[in-house]
Image (cartoon, rainbow, N blue to C red; front, side, top):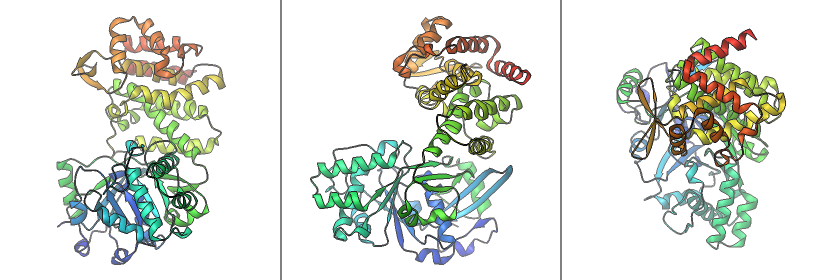
Length: 505
C-alpha cells in the first residue's frame, strides 16, 4: 500500500498521526521554493501542526526549481509524507510518526511556470518560503520574462511582479517572504538582490514602490537535524513498521527552532507560530543566532577533530563516553557559554546548552564527526575565534578546552597524501578525507616544517584568520604543548589527562 489520500482510511495504527479529510479543503496560502527535507521537517511541519489545530488553515504549493529529480512521489502520494521525530526530550526518549498534509501540490518550474504565476492571482496566497541552498541567494543577471527565470531571486521577482499586476498594486496584495537558507541576514540579502534585479529588468517605479512598501522580507534562522533518506534496508523496516510505502519519508530530531525577524503584521500572517514554541517571531533574532552559532556550531567545531581522532565516529558515541563528555560539557557550558560576545542571561545559555547536549546524545541520529570537519578552517575562523578572543579578553588567560580543540584541529589537518587533488590524513592505520579549501597548505606545512614552526606558521597566517593569532598571549605555546602531547601520548590520553587535571584543580 502506497501512502495517499485514498489509502488514509486503511491506516489504523495508534502510533501514526493521520490527518482528517477537512485538511484537504483548506486554501493555498504559501508558495514554497524547494522540496528538501529541511523545509518539509521544519516550516511545513509547523504549518501542518497548526492546520490540525485549526489555527493557520492554509496549505502549501511547492515550486521545484532545480532540474534534478522529479515530482513523482509527491504526485503519487497526493503531497502526503511521513515525518518521524526521534530523540531525547527532557531526558526521555521520544518517537512520533506524523503524516504531514500541508502540501497541496508540487509544480515543476521548468515546465509548469505558468501555473506558478497563476498562484500570484490567488488572494489567499500571503507567504513565500524558500530553501534553495546558500548558492540560491546570489545575484544573477536574470531576465524575469523567461519561462522560468534562471535564478531563485529572478523567479521570486517574476512572481511578485505578476502579483502586483494581478491586484493592481493594492497594499493588501503584498507578501511575507521568509527565506531559510543558512546565511546571515538571509531576508535582507534576498531583498537587496530582488530590488537590484527589478532595476536591471527596467521595471516601473510604481512596482518598485509597491515592492518596498507592501512586501516584507524577514531574516530567519532554522535549526533542526534532518538526516538524508535512510538506506534501502532501513526503509524496508520502516515500511513494515508503518504498514505503507512512503517515498518521501523523512526523520528528524525532536529539537526544532525557526526564529523569524518580524513585527505584529508578520505575526498575524504567520499565525502557525501559535502552535509550537519552536517558532519564535521577534524584532531581533540575533540572540538565537548567537546561541546556535556558539553553543551548537562552535562546540561541534572545537570537538570534531578531537572526537574523531579519539576513535569516535558519531557525536553520540563521544557524548556517551564519560571522560569525553566531561571535557565536552566543560568546553560548552563553562568556556563557550561565558565567552559568547553578546549579553545573554546565564539561565538562557544553560538551557540551550543542555538541549544541545541532548541532541548530541540522540540515539537515532547518526551524525558523523567526519562530516562536521568539512571546511574545518573556515568554521574555526567564523564560529570559534570570536569566542577564543573574547575569553582571553575577559579572563586574561587562554581557555584550556578551546586551546585543546584548536590543537585537535591542527592534528586532524595533518594531510599525509594527495590523490587526484584530494587530501587525506591517517588515523589508526586508515586514511580519512580532509575536505578543506586550505588542505594543500597543511600538506605542505606538515611535510616541510618542524612542529614548532608549523604551529607558528599556521597561527600567523593572516590569509587564514584575517589576523595574526600568535599575538594572543600564551595561545601559541599552549597549542604547541597540546599538540605535542597528542602526538606522543594519543588524543584520548591527552583529553583524559586534561579532564583529570581540571577535576582536581
